[in-house]
Length: 173
Image (cartoon, rainbow, N blue to C red; front, side, top):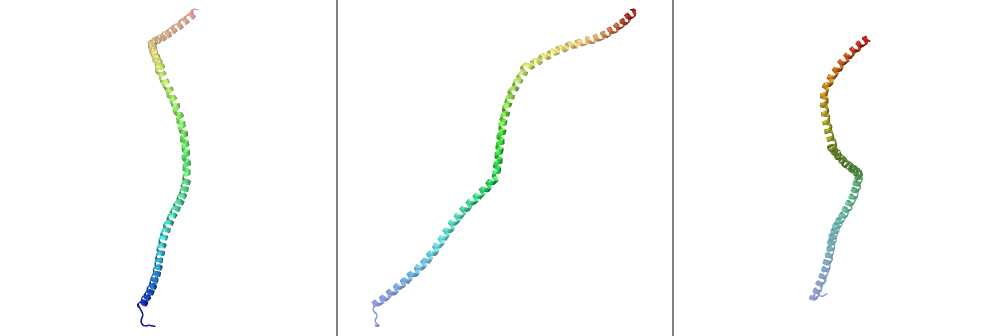
């Protein structure tokens, strides 16, 4: 071979070496870039998947917990609701009965007013009249009472005299 290598040959040799280096570098860069991209994508995907899974899991857990809580809550509250309904019914009955009592009390109020008016307008004047008659009669009897006592004494005396006269008449006869 010729010891004289031309510039063109050197240039070709450099081009070949540079192309090979360039290809090797590109290949190495592609591999590293691919590895880095895969790692990044994997990390991002894992994070996104984990976030989405966590979110979905939380939603499903919340829904299940809510469902179970509601079921237990309903189970515990149903007797209370039933009891409250019974109390409501009883209170309604009491309200109805109280309405009837109110009506009866209204009737009693009317009747009591009538009784009061009757007392005021008829009975009290009649009692006052009876009282005045009684008082005048009492005064008359009081005065006559003394006379009656005297009459009783007189009748006793007359009786004694009559008995005495009767005995005397029997002797005479």
